[in-house]
Amino acid sequence: MPMLKLCFLVVFTEGTKCRFIVQAGVRVEEPVKQVLNSQEVEVWSLITWKLKWGMIFSDIKMKVSGNCEVSERSMMAIMGRNVFIEGLTLDGALIIDSVDDAEVKMGGLIKNSGWAMETVDYKDTSVPEEIRIIGFRFNKVEQLEKKFTQPRRFSMED
Image (tube, rainbow, N blue to C red):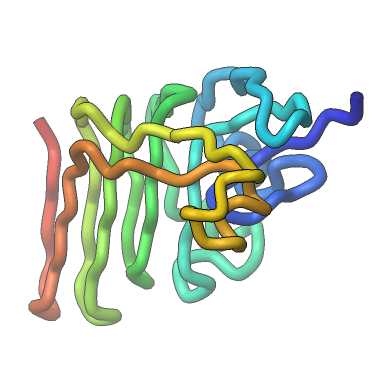
């Protein structure tokens, strides 16, 4: 059975965004094997960002520092240009959204119930076709969502 790696909602051959963030210095736990639509897959931490945060590897590397860790069940979305991950330990779901002129430093321990991945039967016609094709959907149980709308410096640490 072929192995696939999932990274957020798009299937990447090698968990591309997860690998970038690991190469930048974030320790990401190993993926968990699950069966989705009769396919065994490796489910990685769900890490994504807008291109304005990191279009090339040097952008990402410049914005990650300290001892950062992300658990395998975690989800992180970065939607701001000047978001810096410094000494962050994430076990759950984190969404960071900021205006371009804001500078946000995220660090410390963030722990919550996160998002649960629920498998979906591809034969269940009560579920939209695009969800059945993917084989799962997210139940957004709990998340920390931070929105920074002012053009100034913010620091979110313990």
